[in-house]
Length: 157
Image (cartoon, rainbow, N blue to C red):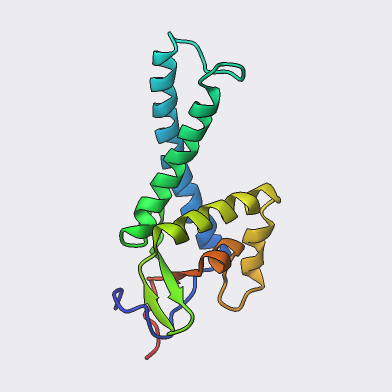
């Protein structure tokens, strides 16, 4: 099986494997957010940081930053989060002008994460879009010019 060459005739990842890798990553991300919350609570004399606390906005932004950094780091450094590695899924940039696949940039990661949050906020409508797209792309794939490639299957030559 050739996992390295995903540039010609890639096999795209369907919605079910996309969601399964997301669940795996979500479990890891929740653990990181719990750790951040424990640290924040310790600095707040053992009390939860609640709305009205002067540090509440900073706390919420810090949690969002942790999530963005978790996904962004893996997407920009090899194209695979831990969940994506487990499910043999790879994220790659799709340069539509030259049809070359490249590493994902931080700008693409930010666009991807932001659009995914909007999609989740709209009851997952952007994810469901992958059921109808011929390349199985969700809204965040389209807006960030990225695609998910199935590494289990060798693309036909």
